[in-house]
Amino acid sequence: MKNIVMIAPPGAGKGTQSELLMSKYGYMHISTGDLIREEMAKGTELGKSVEQIMKSGHFVSTEIVTELLEKCLKEMNNEHPFILDGYPRKLEQCTILDSVLKRIEKSIDVVFYLEMTEEEAKNRILGRMTCPKCHRSFNRFSPSRMPKVEGICDDCHSLLETRSDDTEETFKTRYQEFIQESKPILSYYENLGILKRIDNSGTPEETFSQIESVIQ
Ligand SMILES: [Zn+2]
Image (cartoon, rainbow, N blue to C red; front, side):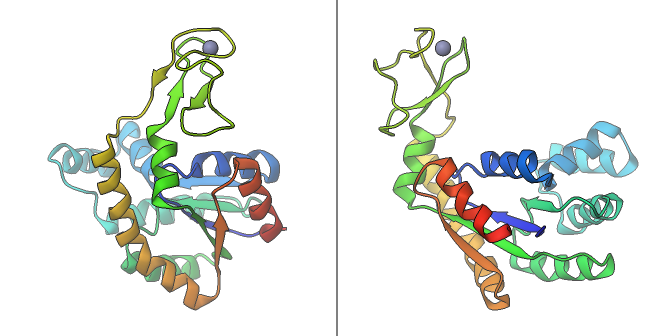
């Protein structure tokens, strides 16, 4: 099975795709955000210093994130393929990742980019609504996921809640930041010949079947 790096704009449903890969193919999901949170929860020396850094409003450095990532990859048993999520986030991290993997004799085999337009991503995020009672989710901009009655849950008829913290303005900033950050990373992997662009404009199932056809 192929080891994966997953890159996607906000709202693309990266989490859903990762979950499908985990349940169907036994993938391990490695998110650097989770690794940082776990380290803090464990209360190690490193965890404590990370907590200090974050409390003071700074970003955790590439050195620390890489250290956590290397430790996790090293401890992982080789039977399970992995999905890397949230790393590399900068171009310099691509080469760092390469040398880490080389050291521990692992590799990245494919980099998926879940492609969608800014408009599609925006609608997914800003249109998101959930039922507070049965937790079913809807989207007021998506014909296939719109509730039958506006603002009301199809199943239990509760009043739906808007789930997004984003406004149109904050979404735009977040999306543009993502595009700027990911551009050099995508071309790095394109040059290595392992970038696969996935059309993410359809349903999660449609996206997943494209992913499956690459990893099988
Ligand atoms: Zn409901």
